[in-house]
Image 1 (tube, helix red, strand yellow):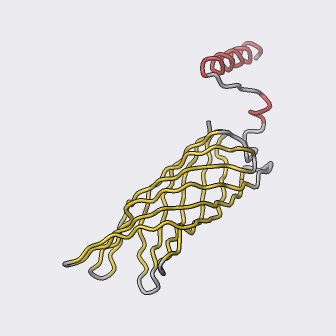
Image 2 (cartoon, helix red, strand yellow):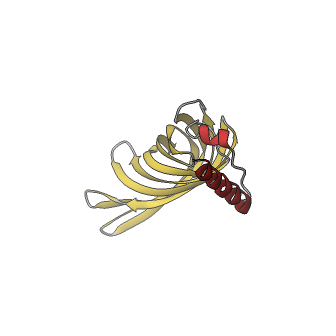
Image 3 (cartoon, helix red, strand yellow):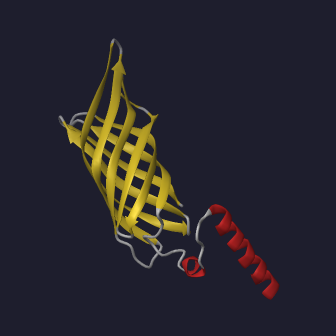
Length: 185
């Protein structure tokens, strides 16, 4: 048992030394403590609703995010996404071309694996529509907000679910419910 522990300890020290990361045993004991981690990156699939009051199109979006936790309670991140699934309303096709933005996160760090959070920021999105004899695009920018929860799967990996209001401009509301994974470095 002692030899196995020594081999694991040596391997941990070598790994930490070769990557420049500090690894500590107390941090491993708190691997499910929420609100920890510095830099992170993630990917989401989001079910996006584009609603103008009379027509409601449901499209899909793949997005990525990168960010940093400034403290256990506050983070900054950038997101970018593109349409992955279009919708047809009668003879009109609706698609999300792109979405990107910058956000601040307010996290409710605690001792459990779940970290609830709020998202506030600005989003720029572009969607297109086309039908027989017509096509067009619309791009907007607006204040965005949302709520979600990260659930730790491992010390460096979490799953998340969130609701976002990406914007409401010119009578068009863009909302989304996303599911994703986030890796912490």
